[in-house]
Image 1 (cartoon, rainbow, N blue to C red):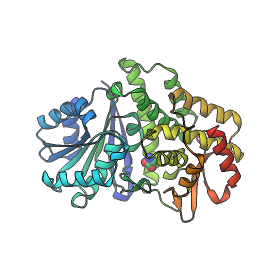
Image 2: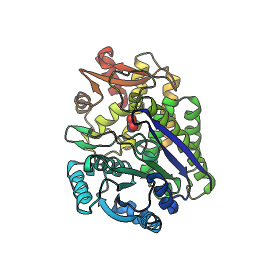
Image 3: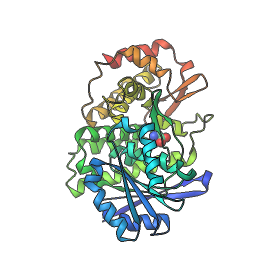
Length: 379
Ligand code: GLY
């Protein structure tokens, strides 16, 4: 079976790591981990949730154990609300109780919640131990498992506390997409559309084409096409991270890491006002893309055809839960606390065409443009 390797170089640490993408790779996770860590006798703590571990835990554990690793397991709750101080504390306690030393490593087996939380714990335990990422959702494959952002949510907002801690390697087995429910796939595809809209017409078209096809993930040909899409998405993300690993506050260029927040300003606000319980992250990003597209049009950066084309691709990703039950005034208030603020200004990532992101401080955006965009989106 074919594997694609995407390599990501991290200049700050003068290091790089591989992201291995293919189908049916979990059974080989032992040899992959041994190659990435450069040994096969350290202790590994698999951090996962009950559902994911029930599906893939034994395959991964057996493969890691068979090559010689000593394996411990720590399961956390399933859902965004478990990306919390409490879960972090429990995970740090597990690392100590199970005796992981500085030559040991954490294996994050799961979606974005598991990856961000396990990565954060790995970055803190003994001031940082190695991390391996095995993402099991489309969203975590193309975005959160790559690039080293870790973190948790607080009562003030999403991902407000965290670190940059790059993994030693990422293993993406697209075969696991078979087990995702429709909402989770829609959420992942919304994040893929976000990334494609930033990357340019080629990736945008490839993503749109995959969305036209049936989601028959039991068909190897379909899975291989998805693997190719994931590889291209990851390559784009790797390029951005390479150029601006820590999202420098003074970098507002169209290739800065900040652009990856396209669709996230409005998306995070929706998630926050619904207490992270109502929308999946990617679904909120779906609305965020629509919002950013509409705001870009109001500022005469995009024309109606481009907005229609973005909205059409988001619609193809699947049904988004209604937001008619959400008070737009609360969303507006929440935008004020967005962590993407730099000093007193909130940076919006907008588009002046597919593949042409632009960062605009809110001080340069008339309030009337934001409020009329809110009205359009909540209509
Ligand atoms: N998810 C956005 C980033 O990794 O920067």
